[in-house]
Every structure is written in structure tokens, then in C-alpha cells.
Amino acid sequence: MNAPLKADATLSQFVIIDVQGRLATVMSADAMQAVLKNCGILAQTAQLLDVAMILTEQYPKGLGHTVSELSALMPNIHPVEKTAFSCLAESKFTRQLTRDHSQIILSGMEAHICILQTALDLIAAGKQVFVVEDAVISRNPANKANALARMRDAGCVITNTESVVFEWLGAAEGEVFKTVSKLIR
Image 1 (cartoon, rainbow, N blue to C red):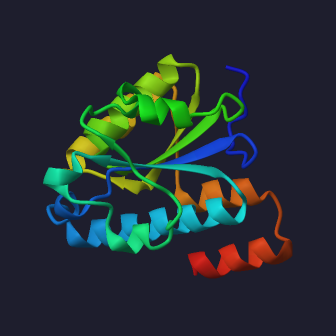
Image 2: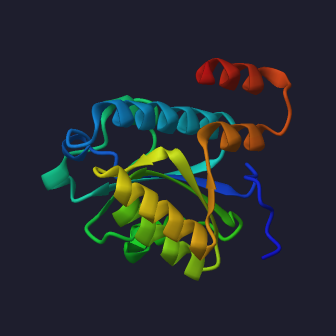
């Protein structure tokens, strides 16, 4: 693969998968708070840098809508509702994937179900996939660890929130850098 190994804001689409109310309540509270914080940092940075974003909701009638901490940060992003575990099985999702964005940055839950299946399908579709390790969660930490290993073996770049935002920024200069620096403190 000749694709760059670092995230590039001009090539990226940022995806938050299924961070919904009823599902969030069954996660470890501390781990969930960390994921919400990191997804928020990524979403705000994506908006500052005009990185395209996609938000999904798995069966919202049963699992609720995106948690308010995140939906408040993205008032203009309309969630793609789905019932399939892989986002690529939903035509509304695939229509939002753009050809000129070869990098897909994944966050959300659960790592071993929807994140994993989406990542594997994105790799098969020729996309470069970055999974933000500190912005994904599973009910069972062992399932998350297994999923991250499988995704790494499949060719995904396993990364973290700060690496992505600073790779997107590229340099420590300007107002966007100052704003993002405040977000990660």
C-alpha cells in the first residue's frame, strides 16, 4: 500500500458509529466518558478543518439517538440510521463516502461489532482505515482488544485522538491550532 501512514485532513472523512444513549449506559462509565471526550475532540477538530463527517445510529428506536454530548457538537450532521452492523451495508452511508477522501477515520461503538465489520468492509472497498483506539469502546475490554488486533492485521492504522488531530493540523500555528490545543488540555 502506497497510501500515507498519517491522517491527512484533505483526504479524510471522520465517522462516529452508534454512540447512542441506551448502548452507552451499558459501557464502563469511565471508559465511556473518555470515548465521549475523544469523539468530541475529533468532531470539533474535523469541523474546524472542514473534514467531512458521517454519524450513524444503529436501530435508534431500540437504542436511542446519539448521546447529547456529541449531537450538540454536530447540529448540522444528520445521522444515518441503520440496522446492519457494517455501515457499508447501508446505502445512505455509502452515498456519503466520497471518492476523493481515501482515508476513513473510525470512532464509536462497539469496537468488535460495528466498528470491526465497517473497517473490514472499508478495507475491502479500497479505503485506508484509521481506527482511533481511545475513541472506540466495547462492553468487554477483551473484545475491544481482539477487534483492534484483527483490524491491525487486516491493514487498518490503529491510532489515537491526539495523533489524528495533530496529523490533520500538520503544524503548530494559527487559530485552529490554538483552539485544538485548548480542546486536548
